Length: 178
Image 1 (cartoon, rainbow, N blue to C red):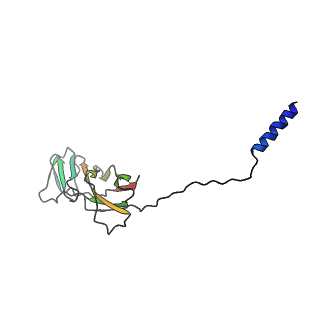
Image 2: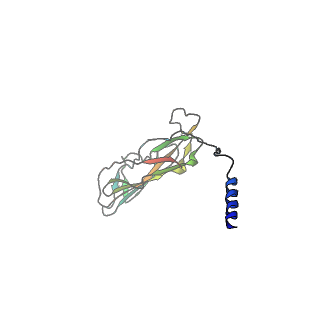
Image 3: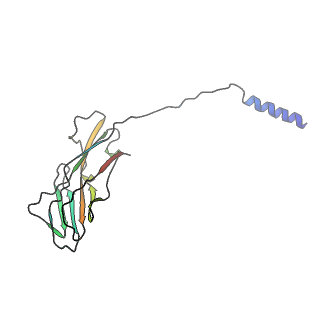
């Protein structure tokens, strides 16, 4: 009896898988190829000349953008005074060209957390994203699939007590698709 029931089960299992030795199915495929990001800068982060009030204290100079179409900046100094013959404070602008289907909201903008200009002289860049302006005209005519925006970058410079001299450096900004 056991032999007969095993044979019936085996025969039933074989008939369930009968009916062909291959099958085909499809799935949709999709890709959207978008234009690369182009980023350029113009202008300079100009802190000017600062006369130190007290050499035993740090000097702090803050530059804040004032407008989305102007390099001029508002300068605040702690423990110092701007030299009258100093250059006017300015901030650089960064201009980004990107794919219109992504839009400004689909981008991430970052900068160096700290730029070391020299031992004891540090700059903390601050993105002026409150001043983003769409329709940047610095680029040649855009492809219909692209748009462009620009924004200023300010920052806070701190010099340790007793540090004197002239210092230069570079501020890096990165714009990336999310």
